[in-house]
Image 1 (cartoon, helix red, strand yellow):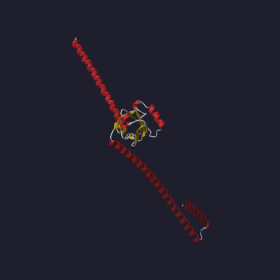
Image 2: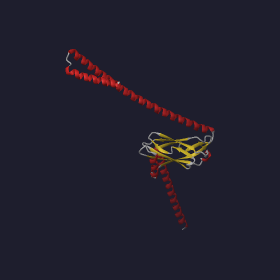
Image 3: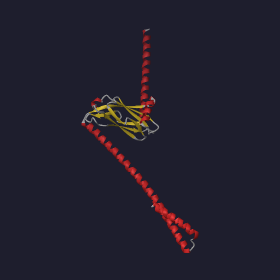
Image 4: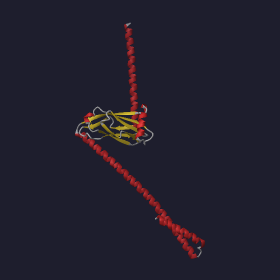
Length: 254
């Protein structure tokens, strides 16, 4: 009887262990699917840690979101301590093939040593349009089902050493310089497009002026020939009207 009970207990324990293993595999597979879906929407840089240098307490720490999805992706950034951090922008939409840089900074009254236990949570979801205002984004995140909300966590890390702080400062300066160069390039492209439009308009204007001049020359030549042959008659009046019209058009055009 004792051996029978022992065997029964072993069988029950084996079933419980197998059930636990199955649940563990199921949960891991679901986590793997969520991660794959997040990777299909956005790439996040840095991917796991937000590093705050101790010698640069006022540094702005960048987080870059690259949209690798076929459509627009909305995002929102949450933190465990909203009173400590300034997040700009805290929400928005990334167009396909584009990127958005989020800047994190400490609020006044807080030191870098106080952020070691804090975390950031990035929420993302596909949207149909990249022209959503803040009111529409708030409504979206308020009513969005959990199965359409993809998450990515970042933990805060405190860094010490001047070399790390200098690297962050250099990175910020390079990023600012890149933004200025991009803005300058956009202005140059806009001026080039304006110059091309003006050149095309001037070319059409010149061609039309030459055409009016040629018409005026033909009319004057015909009028002179009719005057020499003495057969102007009613045709002379018509030619005179055409000549006047051509002169007025040519003069007003130039």
